[in-house]
Length: 69
Image (cartoon, rainbow, N blue to C red; front, side, top):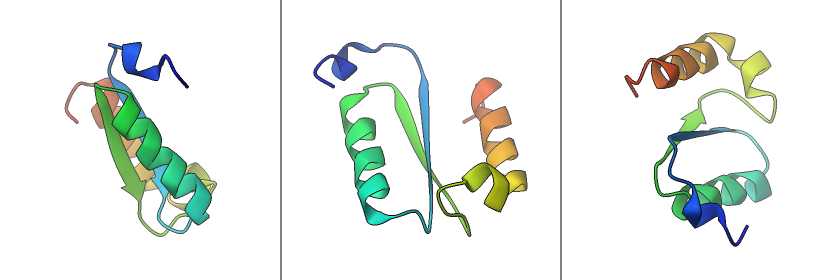
């Protein structure tokens, strides 16, 4: 955790809207520590956001990998 601020590559952090608050806080913390990060909250999703809202998850991941996010 101490070296996260050294990451220079684009990083996507996704968390479900209904994920437990501890994971939401950890996602926020990661986002603050990783300089070149994007934090996306997946609507209508819990901890398994890729299964709970696959359309939004896949679209977001595709945009990120295509450098459009």
